[in-house]
Amino acid sequence: MVNGKRKGGKMERDTAKTLSFWMFNDEHVLKREPTSGAVKHAYCGDIFPMKQIKWSNFPFLIETKTGYEEYTPTLTKYSKILQWFNKSIIESKVHGQWIIFLICQFKNQSALLFTNYQLDLDKIIPVSIIPNQINGEIQWINVYLFKEIIKLNFIDLFGSEITYR
Image 1 (cartoon, one colour):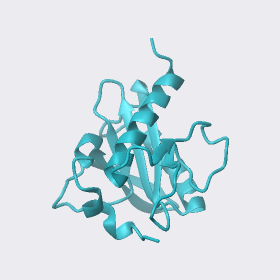
Image 2 (tube, one colour; image 1 turned 135 degrees about the horizontal axis):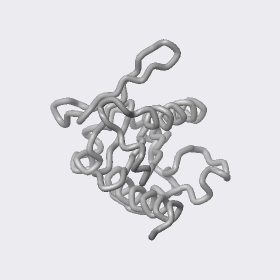
Image 3 (cartoon, rainbow, N blue to C red; image 1 turned 180 degrees about the vertical axis):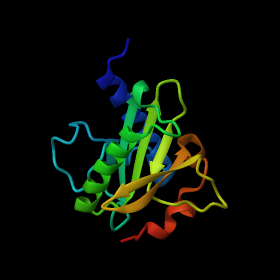
Image 4 (cartoon, rainbow, N blue to C red; image 1 turned 180 degrees about the horizontal axis):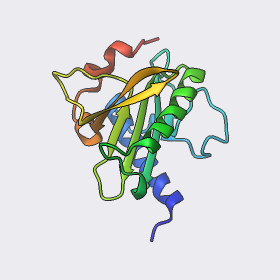
């Protein structure tokens, strides 16, 4: 049996490599944060650039979760997702990373991408949308199948959010 920390580390490494290739066409740009946040960097999250990028900023806060069979979301049960997501919202404001990617691989399920970013509905439709009430205001969390998102062209989806140096 694989312990949870090793399993999470493997998922972070695999996801970092996949996202890095998708975003930069180079699997070595994004890396997992090896110290679980113990060391402070310019960015926060589980995965972020570990080498120079041509963007003036990196707007993505990327968190990953794996396992957590007891927290697999349903239509009426998703409070743990909200807890993880709201923690990311707080961190994103501190670091100026306004697009949240919470990528969850629940046991025996396809990986899901939870994001505050509404993608073009002509390109992909969310599998679900979760209401998230913060300070009396409803914000929506869009849920996509991760494997379907990475089939699409990154620049077509997020190019308007990228500013180059």
